[in-house]
Amino acid sequence: MIPAPLVARPVTSIALIGLAMVYFLMLPVGFGAEPYVGVMMIIGCGLALGAGFVHIVTDRNAAWGYTLGVGLLSALGPLAVLATGLPLVEHRVTADRLLPHCLGLAFLGAVTALLAGATLVLRHRGGRPRTDDPVTSARERARRTAHLRV
Image: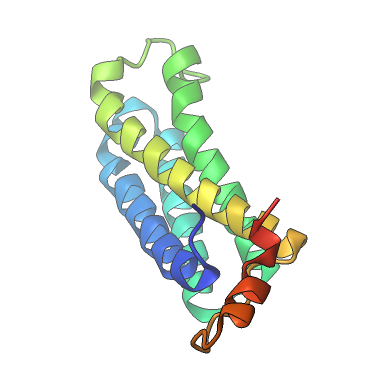
């Protein structure tokens, strides 16, 4: 079950701020491996914070698309590093140093990407019916749930 956009928006904001915190916690590990990795962690933190604050302010499709990109990059990037290693690094970065942070990035990135993708798909298909008003009759309930039946 996909949550309503009124629920997905704050949950996505919190997940993006959590993603930024994981990037921030990875700064010592990133600068310890190579300086450019630490700079990438700072950029990732900024991108995640920016997307989180955009979701607090607006609910546009562009914001959801940006969030989808940040989530996919945050989910797939650490997994690619664990699978192939870091570029321009002579020594192999061991997984025991990166694994807890990489799993956190992958999880929060996947949650963010799934919420953003589901919201964009729902909007493209027509979205959910408005359910602000209470259902007062069986006819109204049938009208509101007609799109859910196959």
